[in-house]
Length: 322
Image (cartoon, one colour):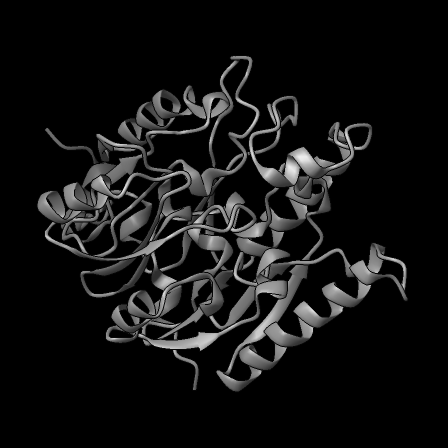
């Protein structure tokens, strides 16, 4: 027997409800608050070259900068925060772009591929990622070869992706992706230790146009990429300090910059200003605004903005620019 309140309750169209954030008609991202963030183990060239006495994390400053990033994204997107387990040693969990990738072309929006880390301090993150995504209802696949998430694999359009390999990711993993998920991966060999993930040198701006540090790659690789996207060249100087480490949020490019903390007249200030100007020119030419977030506390880990953001969907790439 139904009650009056049950009879008055409108019927829900469950078939129309998204089963997870990937199915939303809004941008959705995964972040991790820096509770376990540490620079104890220097696992890239940026960390090894950072002055050892300046490398320890200022945790208050790191949290303030994280909250600024979270607030910026949450203004137009759903932002999930990955719980930090009570486990020691997960110094890089805050860099969720390496945790995995949600393939954008698959029907149903239910699959995620979790990283198989090269870096020793990061290997415990795989189990964290599997548990989290399975709790959200995703089918979690662990990559069978070395693979460091969407930081090394970028969606271009349809079933076409660009994948970096050679430093943190094994090229064999892209054979597995293509077999398992019926997709095409254009492969770029990573050889510059300062551009050790693909997101340091490649940033898909739209479904048709991609920013690329072309001097980092062979002509044959660039020709293969240009068959699927318009390649916009960006300088190696700007790439090394984070131009491509950006995230698109609808019609805004969100980029990390600590320009206002740098002393005018120094080389660091000149390079940062040149990077920001280069990004501003490209963004303006393509109908985008630019927002900068100071994430300098994360430079101590050799990381920048895109490292801290995992896409749960690519809805921003459908946003009209007119």
